Length: 452
Image 1 (tube, rainbow, N blue to C red):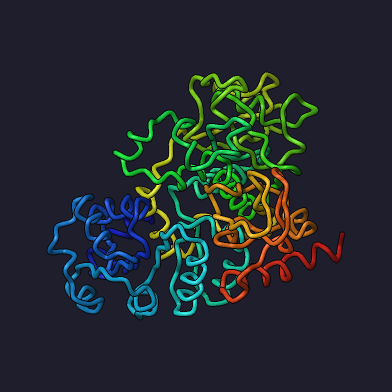
Image 2: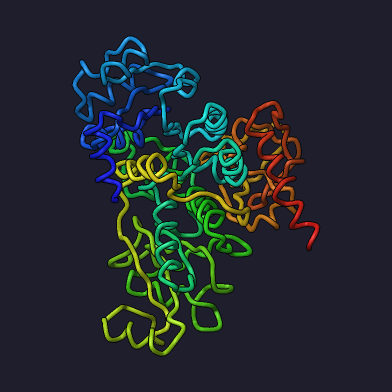
């Protein structure tokens, strides 16, 4: 039975999926816009550091005020409304909540939220992919040990890429490459919140008018977010990653099967079975027509002459050899699609993307020369950007994961372009996120190191 039919059945039986949302910012608001239009789902509670802002966002997306005035979570569960507060612990510990949607965008907090939800028997849809990037494999293991489902969020590009990879493999196609699009030129990795709008093509006044967060937008522009999302995909699908970071080959949709081939066949891949990101800009900055900037794609191989003939007969767009075919979605709708994950984990017990191995990592890399006493400001800031590396390389370097490079003091000089190590900084070792990351390294890296 389809997910929608199952949701309709839950609605008819008055047994809705009961959801708790942590974080009602932009991404969370997009999900909130869809909840009233989705049968069989009751968003019982929202926890946000600013309940007033959460209520304002609810009003912005069209929720009637009377639906958000429940005095407690128990009251909301009883009368079908939504409680808005700041106590996330009460939300994840309530026995009636089925699914927690972690939507804060704060990786260190997200780890704590996820672990607490698992401990209370809740499925988790983790929108904060930054957390998944530095400890997703162990989060997945902790969820499995607790008998619950941990999932990436459909609508965000990693889950959509995982879906395409699953389609390909289920149909019997070898995956040659998979990934997303991005607006990229090499010097963007040096961008700061002060330079981001010029690269984006907006004035500071336009950005301020739209209430756009320069640090968040800069995390996309400087390559950190593409590296984070590619890490999540590699760890969920088992695909490999480039040995020295993403290549960002420029290509139109038409040219993706041409560039996402192995180097010896005229493409850019070190080997088959890799993640990559396609740039929407030529090296000279020219905008490529019909780009994949906001979309996702997978390139597959037709291994036999018969399959390649089928590609030709059905006018599938391939590379010149007819061997490689790319399927793509040119757009993703972000939080508007999260309902797919909520329904999948609650009704089918299936994640829409979840780490199965530790293939990839995102290492904090200096945007400028750093000196002792400098404070790292994390993803999208002034000091570091995130570089995608194989997990084996990160382990060998003792690489500092980008997700933990927030409010951390540098203890020795680091050159511009150099990836930081644990020994370069003074870490707060008391956080659950730090402890989980270190446990993941010992759990997942040890077998690799023993066989190397």
